[in-house]
Amino acid sequence: MITLSSKKRFDKKLDKIRDTKISQSANKKQSNRALRKLLNNRLAVIGGIVFAIIVIMCFFAPLFTSYDPLAIDMTKISKAPSMTNILGTDQVGRDIFTRILYGGRISIMIGFGSALGCAAVGVLLGCYSGFKGGLIDKVLVRISEVFMAFPQLILVLMLAAIIGRSASNIIFIFILTGWGSVFRMVRSQMLSIREEEYVQSLKVFGINDLIICYKHMMPNALGPILVNITLSTAMFILEEAALSYLGLGVAPEIATWGNILNSSQQLHTLQNYWWAWLPVGITISLFVMSINFVGDGLRDTTDPSQQG
Amino acid sequence: MFKYIIKKIIGMIPMLIIITFLIYLLLEMTPGDAVSRMMDPEAIARLSEQELTAIRELYGLNDPFIIRYFKWLFQIMQGNFGTSITSGVPVSTIIGRALPATIELAIAALFISTFLGSVLGVLGAIRKGTMTDNLLTFAGMIGVSIPQFFFGMVCILIFSLNLEWLPVGGRTDPSVVNFFDRIQYLVLPSLVLGITMTAGVMRYARSSMLDTMNKEYIRTARSKGIPEWRVNLVHGFRVSLTPVIVLVGFRLPTLIAGSVVIESIFQWPGIGNTFSSAIRASNYNLVMMIALIFVFMVLFASTFVDIITALLDPRVKLEK
Image (tube, rainbow over all chains, first blue to last red; front, side):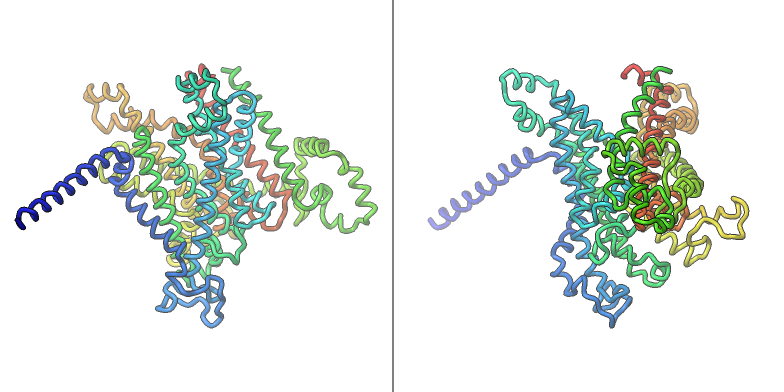
Protein backbone atom coordinates (compact mmCIF):
# COMPACT_ATOMS: atom_id res chain seq x y z
CA MET A 1 0.00 0.00 0.00
CA ILE A 2 2.62 2.36 1.05
CA THR A 3 4.67 1.80 -2.03
CA LEU A 4 1.61 2.17 -4.22
CA SER A 5 0.58 5.50 -2.73
CA SER A 6 4.09 6.79 -2.86
CA LYS A 7 4.29 5.66 -6.47
CA LYS A 8 1.06 7.49 -7.18
CA ARG A 9 2.40 10.55 -5.51
CA PHE A 10 5.52 10.23 -7.54
CA ASP A 11 3.52 9.94 -10.74
CA LYS A 12 1.57 13.00 -9.82
CA LYS A 13 4.72 14.93 -9.26
CA LEU A 14 6.14 13.73 -12.50
CA ASP A 15 2.99 14.83 -14.30
CA LYS A 16 3.18 18.16 -12.66
CA ILE A 17 6.75 18.63 -13.72
CA ARG A 18 5.93 17.51 -17.23
CA ASP A 19 2.99 19.87 -17.34
CA THR A 20 4.96 22.85 -16.22
CA LYS A 21 7.70 21.96 -18.66
CA ILE A 22 5.24 21.77 -21.52
CA SER A 23 3.56 24.98 -20.56
CA GLN A 24 6.95 26.62 -20.15
CA SER A 25 8.09 25.59 -23.57
CA ALA A 26 4.79 26.72 -25.02
CA ASN A 27 5.28 29.99 -23.25
CA LYS A 28 8.77 30.22 -24.57
CA LYS A 29 7.54 29.72 -28.10
CA GLN A 30 5.07 32.49 -27.65
CA SER A 31 7.41 34.69 -25.70
CA ASN A 32 9.08 37.49 -27.42
CA ARG A 33 11.13 36.17 -30.28
CA ALA A 34 12.98 39.41 -30.40
CA LEU A 35 14.15 38.95 -26.82
CA ARG A 36 15.64 35.56 -27.57
CA LYS A 37 17.33 36.93 -30.63
CA LEU A 38 18.71 39.72 -28.51
CA LEU A 39 20.02 37.26 -25.93
CA ASN A 40 21.79 35.38 -28.70
CA ASN A 41 23.70 38.51 -29.62
CA ARG A 42 26.75 38.14 -27.43
CA LEU A 43 27.89 41.74 -27.66
CA ALA A 44 24.45 43.02 -26.77
CA VAL A 45 24.34 40.77 -23.70
CA ILE A 46 27.77 41.85 -22.55
CA GLY A 47 26.75 45.44 -23.21
CA GLY A 48 23.62 44.95 -21.15
CA ILE A 49 25.60 43.50 -18.24
CA VAL A 50 28.17 46.31 -18.24
CA PHE A 51 25.35 48.82 -18.49
CA ALA A 52 23.53 47.25 -15.56
CA ILE A 53 26.67 47.12 -13.41
CA ILE A 54 27.48 50.78 -13.98
CA VAL A 55 23.89 51.92 -13.43
CA ILE A 56 23.52 49.89 -10.23
CA MET A 57 26.83 51.08 -8.84
CA CYS A 58 25.95 54.69 -9.55
CA PHE A 59 22.45 54.63 -8.18
CA PHE A 60 23.39 52.67 -5.08
CA ALA A 61 26.59 54.65 -4.68
CA PRO A 62 26.41 54.89 -0.86
CA LEU A 63 26.66 51.07 -0.69
CA PHE A 64 29.94 51.06 -2.57
CA THR A 65 31.68 54.02 -1.03
CA SER A 66 31.63 55.75 2.31
CA TYR A 67 32.99 59.10 1.13
CA ASP A 68 31.07 62.26 0.37
CA PRO A 69 31.61 63.29 -3.28
CA LEU A 70 31.83 66.95 -2.28
CA ALA A 71 33.89 66.62 0.90
CA ILE A 72 37.16 68.47 0.49
CA ASP A 73 40.11 67.03 2.39
CA MET A 74 43.20 69.18 2.24
CA THR A 75 45.31 66.56 4.00
CA LYS A 76 45.30 64.32 0.94
CA ILE A 77 45.60 66.32 -2.25
CA SER A 78 46.11 64.40 -5.51
CA LYS A 79 47.02 61.16 -3.78
CA ALA A 80 47.64 58.10 -5.92
CA PRO A 81 45.26 55.15 -5.69
CA SER A 82 45.62 53.31 -2.41
CA MET A 83 43.65 51.01 -0.14
CA THR A 84 41.69 53.87 1.40
CA ASN A 85 40.99 55.71 -1.85
CA ILE A 86 40.89 53.05 -4.54
CA LEU A 87 41.10 55.53 -7.41
CA GLY A 88 43.04 58.21 -5.56
CA THR A 89 41.98 61.77 -4.83
CA ASP A 90 41.76 64.98 -6.87
CA GLN A 91 43.35 68.42 -6.42
CA VAL A 92 41.23 69.22 -3.39
CA GLY A 93 41.32 65.78 -1.83
CA ARG A 94 37.96 64.45 -2.94
CA ASP A 95 37.77 60.71 -3.46
CA ILE A 96 37.67 60.10 -7.22
CA PHE A 97 35.93 56.72 -7.12
CA THR A 98 33.12 58.32 -5.14
CA ARG A 99 32.92 61.22 -7.53
CA ILE A 100 32.70 58.89 -10.51
CA LEU A 101 29.79 57.04 -8.92
CA TYR A 102 27.88 60.14 -7.86
CA GLY A 103 28.77 61.87 -11.11
CA GLY A 104 27.35 58.93 -12.99
CA ARG A 105 23.98 59.53 -11.38
CA ILE A 106 23.71 62.98 -12.90
CA SER A 107 25.29 62.10 -16.23
CA ILE A 108 23.07 59.07 -16.70
CA MET A 109 20.02 61.00 -15.61
CA ILE A 110 20.76 63.78 -18.07
CA GLY A 111 21.40 61.32 -20.89
CA PHE A 112 18.43 59.11 -20.24
CA GLY A 113 16.07 61.94 -19.34
CA SER A 114 16.90 63.86 -22.47
CA ALA A 115 16.51 60.81 -24.69
CA LEU A 116 13.12 60.00 -23.15
CA GLY A 117 12.04 63.61 -23.42
CA CYS A 118 13.06 63.78 -27.08
CA ALA A 119 11.17 60.59 -27.76
CA ALA A 120 8.05 61.85 -25.98
CA VAL A 121 7.99 65.20 -27.75
CA GLY A 122 8.97 63.71 -31.09
CA VAL A 123 6.36 60.94 -30.93
CA LEU A 124 3.53 63.19 -29.80
CA LEU A 125 4.16 65.82 -32.46
CA GLY A 126 5.27 63.37 -35.15
CA CYS A 127 2.14 61.24 -34.85
CA TYR A 128 -0.20 64.14 -35.09
CA SER A 129 1.75 65.85 -37.81
CA GLY A 130 2.03 62.74 -39.96
CA PHE A 131 -1.61 61.85 -39.40
CA LYS A 132 -3.13 65.26 -39.97
CA GLY A 133 -0.89 66.71 -42.64
CA GLY A 134 -1.81 70.15 -43.87
CA LEU A 135 -0.67 73.39 -42.33
CA ILE A 136 0.27 72.00 -38.91
CA ASP A 137 2.45 69.42 -40.59
CA LYS A 138 4.18 71.98 -42.77
CA VAL A 139 4.89 74.31 -39.86
CA LEU A 140 6.21 71.52 -37.64
CA VAL A 141 8.44 70.16 -40.39
CA ARG A 142 9.86 73.63 -40.96
CA ILE A 143 10.52 74.10 -37.24
CA SER A 144 12.30 70.78 -37.03
CA GLU A 145 14.36 71.72 -40.08
CA VAL A 146 15.45 74.93 -38.42
CA PHE A 147 16.60 73.06 -35.33
CA MET A 148 18.38 70.50 -37.42
CA ALA A 149 20.20 73.13 -39.46
CA PHE A 150 22.15 74.06 -36.36
CA PRO A 151 24.99 71.71 -35.57
CA GLN A 152 23.59 70.38 -32.31
CA LEU A 153 26.56 71.08 -30.08
CA ILE A 154 26.66 74.71 -31.25
CA LEU A 155 23.02 75.31 -30.40
CA VAL A 156 23.42 73.53 -27.09
CA LEU A 157 26.43 75.65 -26.17
CA MET A 158 24.62 78.85 -27.06
CA LEU A 159 21.45 78.01 -25.18
CA ALA A 160 23.33 76.74 -22.16
CA ALA A 161 25.20 80.02 -21.99
CA ILE A 162 22.00 82.05 -22.23
CA ILE A 163 19.48 80.23 -20.07
CA GLY A 164 21.88 78.87 -17.46
CA ARG A 165 23.53 75.58 -16.75
CA SER A 166 21.58 73.64 -14.17
CA ALA A 167 21.04 69.95 -14.85
CA SER A 168 17.35 70.45 -15.63
CA ASN A 169 18.18 73.26 -18.05
CA ILE A 170 20.65 71.01 -19.82
CA ILE A 171 17.98 68.34 -20.20
CA PHE A 172 15.56 70.95 -21.50
CA ILE A 173 18.12 72.14 -24.04
CA PHE A 174 18.91 68.63 -25.18
CA ILE A 175 15.22 67.94 -25.70
CA LEU A 176 14.75 71.22 -27.55
CA THR A 177 17.61 70.50 -29.90
CA GLY A 178 17.10 66.77 -30.25
CA TRP A 179 13.39 66.14 -30.78
CA GLY A 180 13.65 66.76 -34.52
CA SER A 181 15.07 63.41 -35.54
CA VAL A 182 12.46 61.38 -33.61
CA PHE A 183 9.78 63.64 -34.98
CA ARG A 184 10.84 62.97 -38.55
CA MET A 185 11.14 59.26 -38.00
CA VAL A 186 7.67 58.92 -36.47
CA ARG A 187 6.16 61.24 -39.03
CA SER A 188 7.40 59.22 -41.96
CA GLN A 189 6.11 56.02 -40.30
CA MET A 190 2.73 57.63 -39.81
CA LEU A 191 2.59 58.71 -43.43
CA SER A 192 2.68 55.11 -44.55
CA ILE A 193 0.41 53.82 -41.75
CA ARG A 194 -2.14 56.46 -42.66
CA GLU A 195 -2.79 54.74 -45.97
CA GLU A 196 -3.62 51.39 -44.39
CA GLU A 197 -7.14 50.08 -44.54
CA TYR A 198 -7.85 49.86 -40.84
CA VAL A 199 -7.24 53.57 -40.53
CA GLN A 200 -9.61 54.25 -43.39
CA SER A 201 -12.29 52.12 -41.78
CA LEU A 202 -11.82 53.77 -38.39
CA LYS A 203 -12.31 57.08 -40.10
CA VAL A 204 -15.46 55.84 -41.78
CA PHE A 205 -16.83 54.83 -38.39
CA GLY A 206 -16.47 58.43 -37.39
CA ILE A 207 -14.06 57.83 -34.55
CA ASN A 208 -12.36 60.83 -33.06
CA ASP A 209 -9.16 61.78 -34.87
CA LEU A 210 -7.14 61.92 -31.70
CA ILE A 211 -8.21 58.42 -30.72
CA ILE A 212 -7.37 57.05 -34.16
CA CYS A 213 -4.03 58.80 -34.10
CA TYR A 214 -2.82 58.04 -30.60
CA LYS A 215 -4.66 54.85 -29.72
CA HIS A 216 -4.74 52.93 -32.95
CA MET A 217 -1.89 54.22 -35.06
CA MET A 218 0.79 55.33 -32.61
CA PRO A 219 1.67 51.85 -31.29
CA ASN A 220 2.49 50.80 -34.86
CA ALA A 221 4.85 53.69 -35.37
CA LEU A 222 6.85 53.08 -32.22
CA GLY A 223 9.10 50.29 -33.51
CA PRO A 224 12.26 52.23 -34.22
CA ILE A 225 11.82 54.57 -31.28
CA LEU A 226 13.14 52.18 -28.64
CA VAL A 227 16.37 51.84 -30.58
CA ASN A 228 16.50 55.57 -30.99
CA ILE A 229 16.12 56.12 -27.23
CA THR A 230 19.09 53.90 -26.43
CA LEU A 231 21.32 55.34 -29.10
CA SER A 232 20.47 58.92 -28.27
CA THR A 233 21.04 58.28 -24.56
CA ALA A 234 24.60 57.43 -25.55
CA MET A 235 24.85 60.54 -27.67
CA PHE A 236 23.55 62.83 -24.95
CA ILE A 237 25.93 61.42 -22.39
CA LEU A 238 28.81 62.17 -24.73
CA GLU A 239 27.44 65.63 -25.36
CA GLU A 240 27.02 66.38 -21.68
CA ALA A 241 30.59 65.29 -21.12
CA ALA A 242 31.84 67.50 -23.96
CA LEU A 243 29.83 70.42 -22.61
CA SER A 244 31.22 70.03 -19.11
CA TYR A 245 34.70 69.45 -20.46
CA LEU A 246 34.52 72.82 -22.21
CA GLY A 247 33.51 74.27 -18.85
CA LEU A 248 30.04 75.12 -20.12
CA GLY A 249 27.96 72.32 -18.64
CA VAL A 250 26.48 71.77 -15.21
CA ALA A 251 28.06 73.92 -12.48
CA PRO A 252 31.64 72.73 -11.87
CA GLU A 253 31.24 71.86 -8.19
CA ILE A 254 28.59 69.26 -8.98
CA ALA A 255 30.18 65.95 -9.88
CA THR A 256 29.33 64.78 -13.40
CA TRP A 257 31.54 62.67 -15.61
CA GLY A 258 32.35 65.64 -17.79
CA ASN A 259 33.14 67.88 -14.85
CA ILE A 260 35.58 65.38 -13.37
CA LEU A 261 37.44 65.35 -16.67
CA ASN A 262 37.25 69.11 -16.92
CA SER A 263 39.19 69.54 -13.71
CA SER A 264 42.16 67.69 -15.17
CA GLN A 265 42.65 69.75 -18.30
CA GLN A 266 46.02 71.10 -17.29
CA LEU A 267 48.96 69.31 -18.83
CA HIS A 268 50.48 68.91 -15.40
CA THR A 269 47.50 66.91 -14.19
CA LEU A 270 47.34 65.05 -17.47
CA GLN A 271 50.89 63.84 -17.15
CA ASN A 272 51.30 63.29 -13.44
CA TYR A 273 47.91 62.35 -12.07
CA TRP A 274 46.55 59.77 -14.47
CA TRP A 275 44.02 58.57 -11.92
CA ALA A 276 42.27 61.92 -12.00
CA TRP A 277 41.07 61.49 -15.57
CA LEU A 278 41.79 58.08 -17.03
CA PRO A 279 39.25 56.07 -14.96
CA VAL A 280 36.45 58.57 -15.66
CA GLY A 281 37.22 58.58 -19.35
CA ILE A 282 37.20 54.82 -19.42
CA THR A 283 33.93 54.73 -17.48
CA ILE A 284 32.25 57.09 -19.95
CA SER A 285 33.58 55.13 -22.91
CA LEU A 286 32.51 51.79 -21.44
CA PHE A 287 29.09 53.04 -20.56
CA VAL A 288 28.44 54.64 -23.93
CA MET A 289 29.81 51.57 -25.67
CA SER A 290 27.55 49.26 -23.69
CA ILE A 291 24.50 51.34 -24.59
CA ASN A 292 25.53 51.36 -28.23
CA PHE A 293 25.90 47.60 -28.27
CA VAL A 294 22.50 47.11 -26.69
CA GLY A 295 21.00 49.61 -29.12
CA ASP A 296 22.59 47.91 -32.09
CA GLY A 297 21.39 44.53 -30.87
CA LEU A 298 17.89 45.90 -30.44
CA ARG A 299 17.94 47.31 -33.93
CA ASP A 300 19.11 44.05 -35.43
CA THR A 301 16.32 42.16 -33.71
CA THR A 302 13.51 44.59 -34.37
CA ASP A 303 14.50 45.62 -37.86
CA PRO A 304 16.37 42.90 -39.72
CA SER A 305 16.60 44.99 -42.88
CA GLN A 306 19.16 47.19 -41.17
CA GLN A 307 21.49 44.33 -40.44
CA GLY A 308 24.75 44.59 -42.35
CA MET B 1 18.10 70.70 -64.19
CA PHE B 2 18.74 74.40 -64.08
CA LYS B 3 15.21 74.93 -62.85
CA TYR B 4 15.78 72.41 -60.05
CA ILE B 5 18.90 74.19 -58.86
CA ILE B 6 17.18 77.55 -58.85
CA LYS B 7 14.26 76.05 -56.96
CA LYS B 8 16.59 74.59 -54.34
CA ILE B 9 18.40 77.88 -53.86
CA ILE B 10 15.17 79.85 -53.57
CA GLY B 11 13.90 77.25 -51.12
CA MET B 12 16.75 78.18 -48.78
CA ILE B 13 15.62 81.77 -48.40
CA PRO B 14 12.76 81.26 -45.92
CA MET B 15 15.06 79.00 -43.90
CA LEU B 16 17.70 81.69 -43.77
CA ILE B 17 15.18 84.28 -42.67
CA ILE B 18 13.83 82.05 -39.89
CA ILE B 19 17.31 81.21 -38.70
CA THR B 20 18.56 84.79 -38.66
CA PHE B 21 15.39 85.73 -36.81
CA LEU B 22 16.00 83.02 -34.24
CA ILE B 23 19.57 84.10 -33.75
CA TYR B 24 18.52 87.72 -33.37
CA LEU B 25 15.94 86.64 -30.81
CA LEU B 26 18.63 84.84 -28.84
CA LEU B 27 20.90 87.84 -29.15
CA GLU B 28 18.18 90.08 -27.75
CA MET B 29 17.77 87.73 -24.81
CA THR B 30 21.39 88.19 -23.81
CA PRO B 31 22.51 91.03 -21.59
CA GLY B 32 23.72 94.25 -23.23
CA ASP B 33 22.19 96.06 -26.19
CA ALA B 34 23.08 96.90 -29.76
CA VAL B 35 25.09 99.97 -28.81
CA SER B 36 27.49 97.88 -26.80
CA ARG B 37 27.67 95.44 -29.67
CA MET B 38 28.27 97.92 -32.47
CA MET B 39 30.79 100.13 -30.75
CA ASP B 40 34.14 99.92 -29.14
CA PRO B 41 33.60 99.44 -25.37
CA GLU B 42 36.18 102.10 -24.55
CA ALA B 43 34.33 104.61 -26.66
CA ILE B 44 31.14 103.80 -24.79
CA ALA B 45 32.85 104.27 -21.45
CA ARG B 46 33.80 107.80 -22.44
CA LEU B 47 30.23 108.76 -23.31
CA SER B 48 27.86 110.39 -20.87
CA GLU B 49 24.41 109.03 -20.03
CA GLN B 50 22.67 111.59 -22.23
CA GLU B 51 24.87 110.89 -25.19
CA LEU B 52 24.16 107.19 -24.83
CA THR B 53 20.43 107.80 -24.82
CA ALA B 54 20.82 109.95 -27.90
CA ILE B 55 22.75 107.21 -29.63
CA ARG B 56 20.12 104.63 -28.68
CA GLU B 57 17.48 106.90 -30.18
CA LEU B 58 19.61 107.37 -33.29
CA TYR B 59 20.03 103.65 -33.80
CA GLY B 60 16.35 103.12 -33.20
CA LEU B 61 16.72 100.87 -30.18
CA ASN B 62 13.32 101.99 -29.00
CA ASP B 63 11.72 100.64 -32.18
CA PRO B 64 9.55 97.54 -32.09
CA PHE B 65 11.35 94.21 -32.16
CA ILE B 66 10.54 93.35 -35.78
CA ILE B 67 11.89 96.63 -37.10
CA ARG B 68 15.05 96.24 -35.08
CA TYR B 69 15.43 92.77 -36.53
CA PHE B 70 15.23 93.97 -40.11
CA LYS B 71 17.68 96.77 -39.39
CA TRP B 72 20.07 94.24 -37.92
CA LEU B 73 19.60 91.91 -40.88
CA PHE B 74 20.33 94.79 -43.22
CA GLN B 75 23.54 95.53 -41.36
CA ILE B 76 24.59 91.89 -41.61
CA MET B 77 23.90 91.77 -45.31
CA GLN B 78 26.14 94.76 -45.74
CA GLY B 79 28.88 92.88 -43.97
CA ASN B 80 28.72 94.78 -40.70
CA PHE B 81 28.83 92.09 -38.04
CA GLY B 82 29.49 94.45 -35.16
CA THR B 83 32.42 94.32 -32.79
CA SER B 84 33.60 91.96 -30.12
CA ILE B 85 32.62 93.39 -26.75
CA THR B 86 35.72 92.12 -25.03
CA SER B 87 38.36 93.44 -27.42
CA GLY B 88 36.57 96.00 -29.58
CA VAL B 89 37.89 94.32 -32.72
CA PRO B 90 35.33 93.94 -35.52
CA VAL B 91 33.83 90.46 -35.55
CA SER B 92 34.63 90.05 -39.24
CA THR B 93 38.34 90.56 -38.51
CA ILE B 94 38.30 87.97 -35.73
CA ILE B 95 36.51 85.45 -37.91
CA GLY B 96 38.75 86.19 -40.87
CA ARG B 97 41.79 85.54 -38.73
CA ALA B 98 40.48 82.25 -37.31
CA LEU B 99 38.91 80.80 -40.43
CA PRO B 100 42.07 79.61 -42.24
CA ALA B 101 43.14 77.56 -39.23
CA THR B 102 39.77 75.85 -39.02
CA ILE B 103 39.64 75.16 -42.74
CA GLU B 104 43.10 73.67 -42.60
CA LEU B 105 42.10 71.37 -39.76
CA ALA B 106 38.78 70.50 -41.37
CA ILE B 107 40.30 69.57 -44.70
CA ALA B 108 42.94 67.41 -43.05
CA ALA B 109 40.34 65.67 -40.88
CA LEU B 110 37.98 65.16 -43.80
CA PHE B 111 40.76 63.68 -45.85
CA ILE B 112 41.82 61.32 -43.09
CA SER B 113 38.31 60.18 -42.26
CA THR B 114 37.31 59.72 -45.89
CA PHE B 115 40.42 57.76 -46.71
CA LEU B 116 40.47 55.56 -43.62
CA GLY B 117 36.72 55.17 -43.51
CA SER B 118 36.26 54.10 -47.10
CA VAL B 119 39.25 51.76 -47.17
CA LEU B 120 38.29 50.06 -43.91
CA GLY B 121 34.61 49.99 -44.80
CA VAL B 122 35.27 48.36 -48.14
CA LEU B 123 37.67 45.92 -46.52
CA GLY B 124 34.96 44.97 -44.05
CA ALA B 125 32.45 44.50 -46.86
CA ILE B 126 34.78 42.33 -48.94
CA ARG B 127 35.60 40.16 -45.95
CA LYS B 128 32.03 40.15 -44.70
CA GLY B 129 31.45 37.84 -41.75
CA THR B 130 35.12 37.11 -41.16
CA MET B 131 37.29 37.98 -38.19
CA THR B 132 38.54 41.12 -39.98
CA ASP B 133 35.02 42.39 -40.49
CA ASN B 134 34.02 41.72 -36.90
CA LEU B 135 37.13 43.41 -35.59
CA LEU B 136 36.52 46.44 -37.77
CA THR B 137 32.89 46.68 -36.67
CA PHE B 138 33.98 46.40 -33.07
CA ALA B 139 36.66 49.04 -33.53
CA GLY B 140 34.11 51.30 -35.16
CA MET B 141 31.86 50.89 -32.16
CA ILE B 142 34.67 51.83 -29.84
CA GLY B 143 35.36 54.80 -32.10
CA VAL B 144 31.87 56.24 -31.74
CA SER B 145 31.78 55.60 -28.01
CA ILE B 146 34.95 57.30 -26.84
CA PRO B 147 34.51 60.99 -26.12
CA GLN B 148 36.58 63.00 -28.59
CA PHE B 149 38.25 65.05 -25.91
CA PHE B 150 39.18 61.97 -23.91
CA PHE B 151 40.78 60.44 -26.99
CA GLY B 152 42.58 63.76 -27.49
CA MET B 153 43.83 63.75 -23.90
CA VAL B 154 45.17 60.22 -24.24
CA CYS B 155 46.93 61.14 -27.49
CA ILE B 156 48.49 64.24 -25.94
CA LEU B 157 49.71 62.18 -23.02
CA ILE B 158 51.26 59.50 -25.21
CA PHE B 159 52.62 61.37 -28.20
CA SER B 160 53.36 64.80 -26.78
CA LEU B 161 54.16 64.38 -23.12
CA ASN B 162 55.67 60.92 -22.91
CA LEU B 163 57.19 60.31 -26.33
CA GLU B 164 57.68 64.02 -27.09
CA TRP B 165 57.19 63.47 -30.79
CA LEU B 166 54.66 66.17 -31.42
CA PRO B 167 53.81 69.54 -29.87
CA VAL B 168 51.13 69.66 -27.18
CA GLY B 169 49.02 72.26 -28.91
CA GLY B 170 48.91 75.51 -30.82
CA ARG B 171 49.27 75.97 -34.52
CA THR B 172 52.67 77.47 -35.08
CA ASP B 173 55.59 79.04 -33.31
CA PRO B 174 57.29 82.32 -34.13
CA SER B 175 60.27 80.82 -35.92
CA VAL B 176 58.12 78.91 -38.38
CA VAL B 177 57.75 80.29 -41.88
CA ASN B 178 56.02 77.84 -44.18
CA PHE B 179 53.34 75.19 -44.03
CA PHE B 180 55.71 72.23 -43.93
CA ASP B 181 57.47 73.53 -40.84
CA ARG B 182 54.28 73.67 -38.87
CA ILE B 183 52.76 70.47 -40.17
CA GLN B 184 53.81 68.80 -36.92
CA TYR B 185 51.27 70.99 -35.14
CA LEU B 186 48.54 69.81 -37.46
CA VAL B 187 49.22 66.08 -37.12
CA LEU B 188 47.69 65.36 -33.72
CA PRO B 189 44.52 67.48 -33.87
CA SER B 190 43.67 66.40 -37.40
CA LEU B 191 44.31 62.75 -36.61
CA VAL B 192 42.16 62.84 -33.50
CA LEU B 193 39.33 64.64 -35.27
CA GLY B 194 39.71 62.49 -38.37
CA ILE B 195 39.79 59.18 -36.53
CA THR B 196 36.75 60.01 -34.44
CA MET B 197 34.88 60.75 -37.65
CA THR B 198 36.13 57.62 -39.38
CA ALA B 199 33.68 55.23 -37.72
CA GLY B 200 30.64 56.81 -39.32
CA VAL B 201 32.19 56.86 -42.77
CA MET B 202 33.33 53.27 -42.36
CA ARG B 203 29.86 52.07 -41.51
CA TYR B 204 28.41 53.88 -44.44
CA ALA B 205 31.08 52.72 -46.87
CA ARG B 206 30.63 49.13 -45.72
CA SER B 207 26.90 49.04 -46.30
CA SER B 208 27.24 50.90 -49.58
CA MET B 209 29.87 48.44 -50.77
CA LEU B 210 27.75 45.47 -49.69
CA ASP B 211 24.89 46.95 -51.61
CA THR B 212 26.99 47.30 -54.72
CA MET B 213 28.46 43.82 -54.47
CA ASN B 214 24.98 42.34 -54.66
CA LYS B 215 24.29 44.09 -57.94
CA GLU B 216 24.01 42.07 -61.12
CA TYR B 217 26.86 43.68 -63.00
CA ILE B 218 29.22 42.47 -60.32
CA ARG B 219 28.04 38.94 -60.99
CA THR B 220 28.53 39.57 -64.70
CA ALA B 221 32.03 40.83 -64.09
CA ARG B 222 32.84 37.75 -62.04
CA SER B 223 31.41 35.41 -64.64
CA LYS B 224 33.58 37.04 -67.27
CA GLY B 225 36.54 35.71 -65.30
CA ILE B 226 37.85 39.05 -64.11
CA PRO B 227 40.13 38.52 -61.12
CA GLU B 228 38.48 39.05 -57.75
CA TRP B 229 40.63 42.03 -56.76
CA ARG B 230 39.69 43.78 -59.99
CA VAL B 231 36.01 43.12 -59.43
CA ASN B 232 36.30 44.52 -55.92
CA LEU B 233 38.40 47.52 -56.70
CA VAL B 234 37.35 48.64 -60.16
CA HIS B 235 33.73 47.57 -60.30
CA GLY B 236 32.70 47.66 -56.68
CA PHE B 237 34.85 50.21 -54.93
CA ARG B 238 34.53 52.92 -57.53
CA VAL B 239 30.78 52.79 -57.72
CA SER B 240 30.11 52.41 -54.04
CA LEU B 241 32.34 55.31 -53.13
CA THR B 242 30.39 57.98 -54.96
CA PRO B 243 27.79 58.29 -52.19
CA VAL B 244 30.53 58.27 -49.57
CA ILE B 245 32.22 61.22 -51.20
CA VAL B 246 28.97 63.07 -51.65
CA LEU B 247 28.26 62.52 -47.99
CA VAL B 248 31.17 64.76 -47.08
CA GLY B 249 28.56 67.49 -46.95
CA PHE B 250 26.56 65.62 -44.37
CA ARG B 251 29.60 65.27 -42.19
CA LEU B 252 29.89 69.00 -41.86
CA PRO B 253 27.81 69.34 -38.67
CA THR B 254 29.88 66.62 -37.00
CA LEU B 255 32.98 68.33 -38.23
CA ILE B 256 31.94 71.68 -36.82
CA ALA B 257 30.91 70.29 -33.44
CA GLY B 258 34.10 68.24 -33.39
CA SER B 259 36.25 71.22 -34.22
CA VAL B 260 34.86 73.13 -31.24
CA VAL B 261 35.98 70.37 -28.90
CA ILE B 262 39.24 69.45 -30.62
CA GLU B 263 40.34 73.04 -31.10
CA SER B 264 39.97 73.78 -27.44
CA ILE B 265 41.92 70.69 -26.39
CA PHE B 266 44.80 71.49 -28.70
CA GLN B 267 44.58 75.26 -28.35
CA TRP B 268 44.13 75.46 -32.10
CA PRO B 269 43.42 79.12 -32.95
CA GLY B 270 40.39 78.42 -35.14
CA ILE B 271 36.71 79.30 -35.16
CA GLY B 272 35.70 76.55 -32.78
CA ASN B 273 38.14 77.69 -30.16
CA THR B 274 37.06 81.30 -30.66
CA PHE B 275 33.47 80.19 -30.26
CA SER B 276 33.92 78.40 -26.97
CA SER B 277 36.06 81.10 -25.46
CA ALA B 278 33.55 83.74 -26.62
CA ILE B 279 30.84 81.83 -24.79
CA ARG B 280 32.95 81.62 -21.69
CA ALA B 281 33.55 85.38 -21.85
CA SER B 282 29.83 86.08 -22.48
CA ASN B 283 30.87 87.76 -25.72
CA TYR B 284 27.45 87.14 -27.21
CA ASN B 285 27.70 89.13 -30.40
CA LEU B 286 30.70 87.11 -31.49
CA VAL B 287 28.96 83.90 -30.41
CA MET B 288 25.87 84.62 -32.47
CA MET B 289 27.83 85.62 -35.54
CA ILE B 290 29.90 82.46 -35.46
CA ALA B 291 26.75 80.41 -34.96
CA LEU B 292 25.24 82.20 -37.94
CA ILE B 293 28.24 81.29 -40.07
CA PHE B 294 28.09 77.66 -38.95
CA VAL B 295 24.40 77.39 -39.79
CA PHE B 296 24.95 79.00 -43.18
CA MET B 297 27.70 76.54 -43.89
CA VAL B 298 25.50 73.57 -42.98
CA LEU B 299 22.59 74.88 -45.02
CA PHE B 300 24.70 75.59 -48.08
CA ALA B 301 26.41 72.25 -47.79
CA SER B 302 23.15 70.33 -47.62
CA THR B 303 21.72 72.25 -50.55
CA PHE B 304 24.93 71.63 -52.45
CA VAL B 305 24.70 67.91 -51.66
CA ASP B 306 21.10 67.86 -52.88
CA ILE B 307 22.16 69.45 -56.14
CA ILE B 308 25.13 67.14 -56.63
CA THR B 309 22.99 64.10 -55.94
CA ALA B 310 20.47 65.32 -58.45
CA LEU B 311 23.22 65.83 -61.01
CA LEU B 312 24.59 62.35 -60.46
CA ASP B 313 21.29 60.57 -60.22
CA PRO B 314 18.54 61.68 -62.59
CA ARG B 315 15.89 59.76 -60.65
CA VAL B 316 16.00 62.31 -57.83
CA LYS B 317 14.56 65.02 -60.01
CA LEU B 318 11.52 62.98 -60.91
CA GLU B 319 10.59 62.54 -57.27
CA LYS B 320 10.42 66.23 -56.66
